[in-house]
Image 1 (cartoon, rainbow, N blue to C red):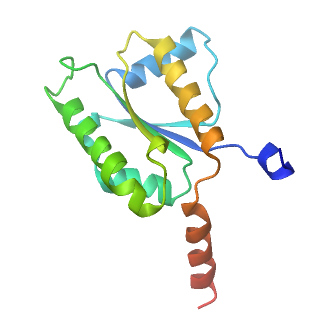
Image 2: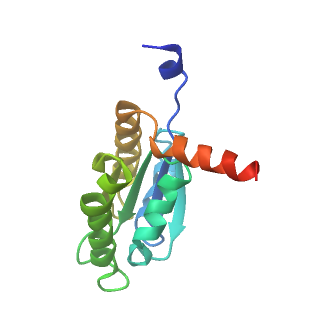
Length: 153
């Protein structure tokens, strides 16, 4: 393992629905469950608000892995928001990620009910481990170069 690999700390973004997965994250904290500190949780009203651009922007801005955490099928407070969120997540994962030069394994959708604090902690740890295994987001270097070029203009 190189020194650079030893120092690598992945950046993992979780888009979580308010009513289920975000509540599960809160429960995990109340239960004092330990999960990766590399995960940053973004609270959404519903995973139905997920759009491809939002997911792609997370990678563009440096996330090494991204996951969407929503209600169980049939339990969405907005009827079928989680179905739409899963559909958009799968579209980005299966259709757009390769075009960006990213492995599809960097993106995932999890169904995590409000009562599943351990499930939230497991998803966070799994996605962090996946990010470590895949290594740094290769898109980061291109964005950084573009930013540096723009600064010199």
